[in-house]
Length: 124
Image 1 (cartoon, rainbow, N blue to C red):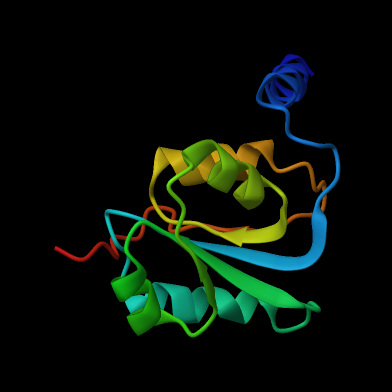
Image 2 (image 1 turned 90 degrees about the vertical axis):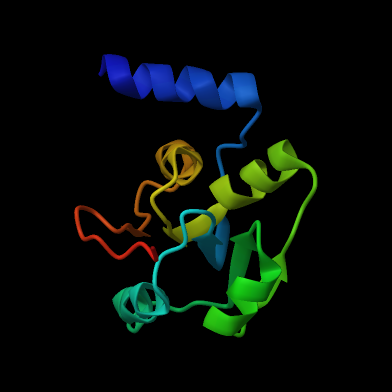
């Protein structure tokens, strides 16, 4: 209960709304970059879910375009981008703390978060 209260308090401080954008899948591609196969395998989790739009958030649009053919958001405003990530209905995240925090702060109680876990898929 205490952790949930702290997450709620942090959402208020960062000003994250209590709603999300239904049908939006956020895909994060940041350093260290995961292998393309990780993203392809992750998309399989959403085959039975209605996804209206997939949005790729990245710090490297060149790599993102090689990986996926979706709308790509490249932003110079980190806070604005972070809020957009938090508002996606579901997420495919990478191994960054930025991604994990966005997943935790996402207000959707039924969200699906696909993450790499302990699998070593980082490009070296």
